[in-house]
Image 1: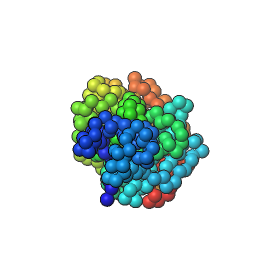
Image 2: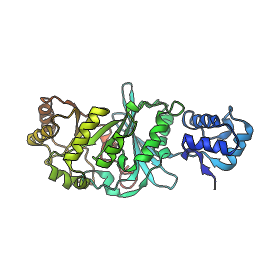
Image 3: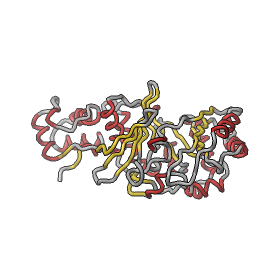
Image 4: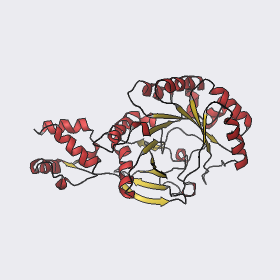
Length: 341
């Protein structure tokens, strides 16, 4: 059975060229055709010899993700239901904003972490995505919309730091000048706060931004709502975040406000106490409800009250405008094709 050439890294492609008796630079040309020119047909690769094209077509195929469904929200956000080669499904979201064109990508089929307020947790965990499957989400959306993608957020289905090796491979494709050419400084990895994963990031040359889904300033409540917090204590997490902000980029702490759960001023006071001394941004996110979950978004007045209180701190505070809620494309609403799409 022919292997999918899209699944090979640039280094692996160079090894293939050498094994076939060709110059390693031919892999650069091939990589560029696949990832920059979005080509799946060997016959159009005019700067590659007919001999090599014939050999490649006999040994390999070039195949990517397939678009199952595209849904447009009232705010022009778009949600893409994508089919993988094994017939599993994932979702990715396109968010346009002035000159910034962002894609929120999935890194796993489902998620194993079981956060009680997230729709992705309802479908359980199937498998990790491969590097090319992660990168291919951006390529497919860019091709479909004829719009150059400028920013990438690893924040769709799944926990990126549980699949960090493949995420790193995807970043290599995305930032390559013969790939999609997206700057690492325009990429964000969003995590629930896996200590081992953040430690790994600290010791890599990656320049990506880090966002931590803190959400609950009371540690016991956080453990209840986010079971992964039981093995990732806040004290260690915050220590690493402080180090990341000093050595790399300012960390963003995401605080999802849920009605009657963490929407009191005392919760905001506790949050600021936790983050004291950390150079950080706080991203206030009104909860995106899902029909199959019992949680709701607080009243606008309550959200505004917490936001105004947080503004009294030295941190950079943003109140995120929810995007794509009407098509279940907001944070925590992605669930593949298992429920509502």
